[in-house]
Image (cartoon, rainbow, N blue to C red):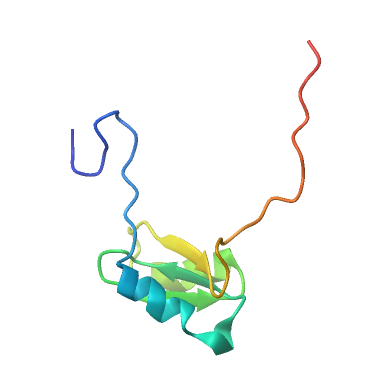
Length: 88
């Protein structure tokens, strides 16, 4: 298998370096905004939404896969709803 896949065949997720994550999370004036991080270079692009951040990132890295975070928060998205099971 290629280096982009795990031994079980699932895609490998590239995470940014811890120093890059610390740098992005330290941008206190940007709290709540989304950062699209290109993991290999550490470059990041900010937007008010995930789509806005992605559009900025794609201008520089059109074929890259990005890692997204919400600045000052542990996750980029939170699911507040529930799941409904279909009745058999």
